[in-house]
Image (tube, rainbow, N blue to C red; front, side):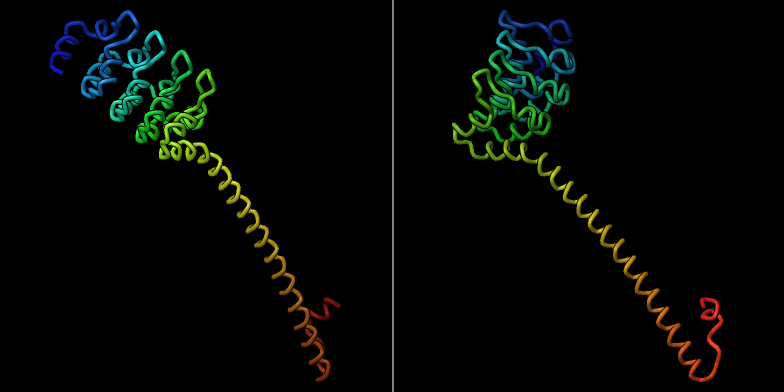
Amino acid sequence: MEVVRALLEVGGREVAMMTRNDGVSCLWISAKKGHLEVVKALLEVGGGKLVMLTADDGASCISISAEEGHVDVVNALLEFEGRELVMLTENDGTSCLYMSAQNGHLDVVKALLEVGGRELGMLTKDNGASCLSISAEEGHIHTVHARTHAHTHTHTHTHTHRERASERERTHAHAHAHAHTHIRKHTLTVCVLQCISCWQRLNLGLPPPLSSRESL
């Protein structure tokens, strides 16, 4: 680690951005090995431009760290570019989610899905293979569950929202109808009581109440 810092102090961003003939960067190599502190040191110098570098075959630093299951490195990389980074694919369409699903790295799969969501989960290779198909092929039931949960979460959330809205409408309609019924019952009761009062006063030889005579 101290050697890396010493080299960065001398070469700075220029040395951090250097790549091999195949396009592999120093960040890519440290991400593959899971050297978190080295990754952080390189990111401090190279930033988002460095993290978005890919090898000639399209492999990115996040795809290789996801393949190896280095979730701490994955999270450190996501802090710089997030969604744009997770949506990078290799030349054959392989995504970082595909690589982590293939090797059964559940914690990495979850971290990637939190950023990329359904769109990331729906990416396929050029041959049509998906992250779900490869995790099912390898027998990684826990990553299969994580993928299907991410796919259904949005639908379930929307469905629940609609149900709640419909329930509120039904409740409002019920309350409105109940209020009208209550008013009608109250009005009828008042009329009945007025009639009884008039009838009693007439039997006693008294004139009807003023309100009743006005209504007449």
